[in-house]
Image (cartoon, rainbow, N blue to C red; front, side):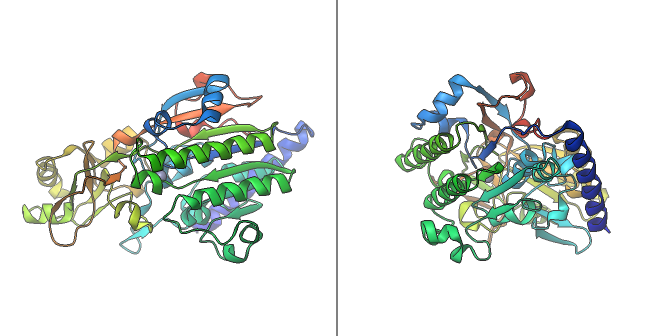
Length: 400
Ligand SMILES: [Zn+2]
C-alpha cells in the first residue's frame, strides 16, 4: 500500500513538475555538481591542504552549519537529497525498528523515503542526473529516477565501463575507493555533456581510521580536493555545492544499553544504534545516540533513571521530546532517545555492559558531530547566504 501511495505521489509530482517546465519554456538550468564528503567535519578541512576548497570558500558562499540528528550518514544524505528534515523524509537512522516484523532492519528499501528526492525533481524538470556513491546503501535508497548510478558494490560494477577505465573497484575499506568514485564521476561528466545534475558521495572510512592531523587523512583530503579542482576544470560552467553529513570524534566508552538496563533490573525491549550499518569495520555499529524501545510504557521513568545514571550519558529524551527537538518521524524512533557526551557511544557488546575503547577509535552519531562546512560555488541562481542555515539546504533551491 505504501509503495502504491509513494508511486502515485511521485507520478503526481512528476506530472505537476513537467507541466511547470513546459509552462516555463526551455531555459536550461545551470549544470550542478553536489559533493557530499562523508564525515568531513570542519577540523578535517582546517587540518588539510585543500586549495580548491579554500578558493571556493573565499569566492563563494561558505558557512559552518548544523547537520541533522542523529549525526549518521543516511539521515543526512537523504536530508540533503530531499531538502527535508527526517520528519518529512522518513529516515531516522541507518537502521530502523520495523513494527511489522518486530525486528531491527537496515534501511535499504527506497520506499522508506516518503518525499520526492532531488533526482525526482530533476527528472520532472527534464534534467538528466547521476548518482555516484561509495556506499551501496545510498544507491539502494536514493537512485530511483537517476539516469546513471554507480557504487563499487553495485551489481555489474566489476565489469562496468568504469571498471574498464579505472580498474575493478577498490575495497570499500580504503581511501582509494573514494578516488575511484570521483574518477568515475569525472569521466562520466566529461563523456555526457547533457548530464545536468551529478551527486557524488565519498566514504568516511578514512575519518573513522585517522584523526584530522594524521598524514593519511591529510593525503586523502588533499586528493579529494584535487578531484574537486578537476571537476571544476572539466565543467567550468557548473555550480558546485559541497557539504557533509557529520564530523567525527574519538570515543572512549561504549554502553550496551540492553545489558546495562537488564543488570539494573529495568530491562528494555531493544536498543537500536542509528549508526549501525553493514560497514561494520568503520565503527562496529556503535554511535553517539540510541533509540530505546520499552517493554511497557509503565517502565519509562525507571528506565530513564537507569540510563541517566550511566557515565557518559548526557540526556535521555522521551519520544515526544526527541521528535520535537530533532524533527524526527514518530513511527521510526524509540520510546526514548539517548544522547551520549562527546566520547561515549552505544551499541551491542558481546560479553559486557560496557567497554573501554582503544585510543584510535573514532565515531559519530552524537550532537558533537552535528556541525559541518557548506560551500556554494559558481551557482548563478543560488539564494542569499542566509538561506543556507543547515547542511540539507545546500541543494534545496534547485528545480523548484
Ligand atoms: Zn557518514
